[in-house]
Image 1: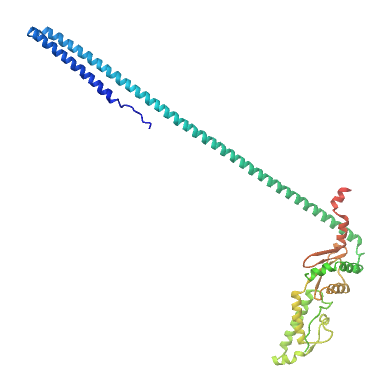
Image 2 (image 1 turned 180 degrees about the horizontal axis):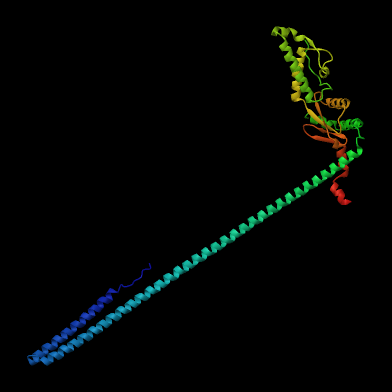
Length: 202
Length: 159
């Protein structure tokens, strides 16, 4: 438990100082009383001048005693206060150090977490981008090759058509269907099994 | 009472259009015959009346037939129209009747009720292309030429 002990003076020291002060005052009182009585006994009746001197002495002595007591009490109080303050400052310092370490560690941890998170995000984004680019590349390649194939086929067909048209025009009806009868029937006969299978669903 | 049943389609009847033409004729004949009768009884009495056939139908019967046979024929033709296999043959020119019948006879040797549709495409140059329900068999001269020439672009590149 880290509770600061500020403004709570040590009770024992306080009592002690009070006792000292009272003791001093009492002592002076006794001394003064005894002297005054002595003077009265010796002379019968104190002289006014002697009374004044004793009173002054008493006053001075009591003032000195009071001053001393005050000084002592003040110094004791100050020492105690300083001691308490020191202890509290040390505690506070320790607390601050612990908490600052804790805060620093937490901050460092969160910073490193953030760093790791960012790195992971960047890596995953990079991977995704790589994946997309690969897919895109393969799509483009496929598209290009299919377009190329289509274009080649189209050109091929066109050229074939041109050739056939040219042949047709060149032949100009020289080939008659009646001339082809035997040829066609021969071809049909060669493929009879296949055709028969298809027709009869066998 | 005859129970006429076809064993094969006649050579003269090659395609679906002709069959529907015959069915149409039979329907008209039967309905006009029924309309001509004053009573059902009279109709039944005349059931076996012999009738003349149009030319196309003469291929079915060598002689006159009865109304009963006609109705029977109509039924069979309807069945053939729905179930008979159809083959399409593409030629480079319009064939004459003799060639049509020869080709039809050849196909009828495989299936007696097969229907033969004839198409014309000059670009095949010669030969024919047979198209069945399952596949297309290219027996044309165009295909033969193609197989000889190969990929023209490659050929041009190599020149």
